[in-house]
Image 1: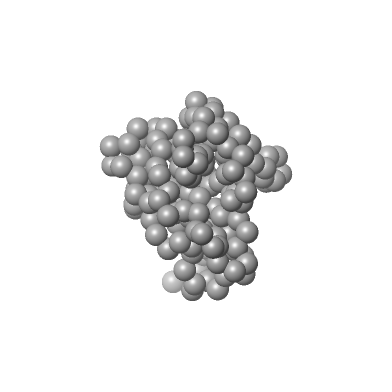
Image 2: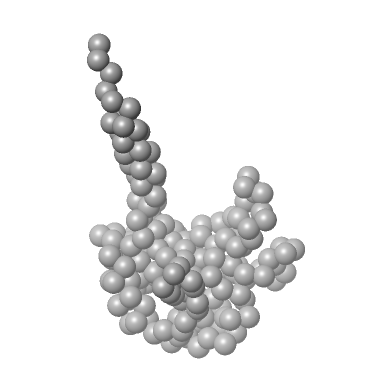
Length: 167
């Protein structure tokens, strides 16, 4: 039996690895923001361009030194209503914690589909940033050229427009 040339085999292996890596990565089909309600309680604001809403919102403590097997904070999912329409707000009941875990200075908030087929771009923030927000303002994390990030305050309408641009 004839063997394929070595270069053909290498190209085939590279293609299979690339296909495997991209198949596991969910698409980004929206943006996550955070605001406060009239009482100053944190509220997630989601805007998406997928054909259905994400299933839930997760909050991570943003620590890079957390053991990979360790749970993220707060270890709970905030469900998105199944019939939600973009943009949607979801109360973050129980957040922020009265006393953050040791070493936690920032949080990452994002939404994902139940089947992990898509997620929303996360917002990275410190609790002190929430104190400066008014209910009509939404804090988001922008991605700049070169992959740099910065936080910005936008309206819900601007969040929805930017989410449409994600797709």
